[in-house]
Length: 367
Image (cartoon, rainbow, N blue to C red):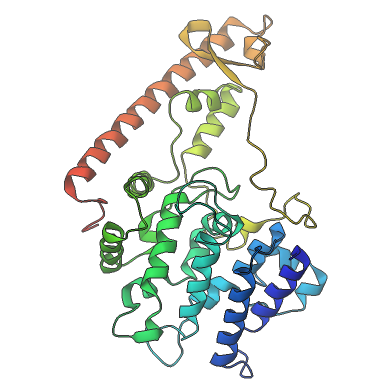
């Protein structure tokens, strides 16, 4: 089935998930969710435009919808809000349709068009990649804490689905990225599961779930440790040095930016900003290329590191014969300081990791 048909199916689904419309009943939302699930489970699986991943998750809140004149006049209720929609009549509970909605979301992110049985490792499909690039406010609309804390328990169907929510939470903790969908950016578990009791429920599930391997658990543990240590994943070794050697000023700016909170967590629409990808391409282009800056790190002046283009040609003013000795020396000192700082940070994280391993499986109890 072509991507145009998929776009139509998504729009019809989202139009029928709006809980504010009195004409749309629970049975209508359930029927539409089941119909869309039948559509995506067909063989061969349908194709999707890149914009449609964000459209399905965010609905009218996605830039794809706001930038399209036809979609701008529609009310499209995204799957994230549908899966985390709170009940108005039952305190701390979800709408009954939230349970089948998060079940469908799990299928799309972890099972749709997968040939590998390992759901968390390897290349993610477009839905999984889009979910893992969401920022914290977007992730909170899923109400993972309610699903995990009350799902399949005394609240019945209004408590949501604990197993589906735990699978999605594990995926987010293992594979969360920056908005470029490539750069790892571990999310703090307290941001998605604020309550300690809920985090304990998730930890127990993680330790016993047969679909979560030891490698995935280790990955989640490391990411939790990194996120708790102060923001996104730190650059280490040659990566930190390579980021530092453009010029003294630009290198310092790059280092600060890579080791601080970028402040975009409150931008609910930021992850699906306007892209240069042609919408009318039936297959995702997000995975087609690998970033290759063509930079080679070599030992140079003053024991520091320099960047060349692979052919021995300098790529910076400081490496030319015209650069002053003072400028070269100052940059060499800066690189030595950054290398020392990187090694200290690496040792600190290793020590923290060892303490966490000796305390409990994930190091989050009592936090």
